[in-house]
Length: 239
Ligand SMILES: C[S@@+](CC[C@H](N)C(=O)[O-])C[C@H]1O[C@@H](n2cnc3c(N)ncnc32)[C@H](O)[C@@H]1O
Image (spheres, protein in one colour):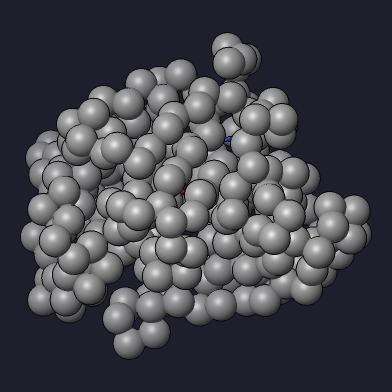
């Protein structure tokens, strides 16, 4: 795979979401689950909740130390990151395949692989230190349904063909559709986690939907009644 340096093209939502450039301060400890978060985590992870807790410990310690997320994210690691991603789990087809573009610290890829052990995941990430970190975490969690691919999405169009392509905080839709759509199987669909500007992004990307043989986009708000803040997802089928 390519050793090409990554130059992140995060959307505004991504920069805001991850706080990657903040200084780390002690202590780097995982937060306790609130009662509402525990209820959601039990529903989403089932008997794999202890593994999800371990994932959160990794994110809050070495994930923050390595600058994958900012220290201010620690108190909201469950609500804003892990649960917010895992809520996509029930949307994935049984026994299917998922390609997650720009996984970074395994979000949503590792969170979903924990929630859906019946689904096979390919996590595509160009940055070496992020791949190394995810490799360490995947081995520690004993995840058998995750393959890590060190590459930019546009370099793997010949080898990846997934039922679902996911991405979070990689770039605005206009740039993201050309990265994600070519990895879709013929009857596949995109499930892209987005921020509040999703409608404007859809409008700005109108041409890219037809260029990339994509159907009508739908905006979902997942986690109603389960999460404090719902997750906005753009769902779009292959045409
Ligand atoms: C802001 S981070 C988001 C990481 C993770 N998805 C999350 O939500 O925490 C954006 C990630 O996209 C990756 N990335 C940027 N361009 C990419 C491309 N063309 N193909 C695959 N990944 C890419 C970056 O290396 C980075 O890890």
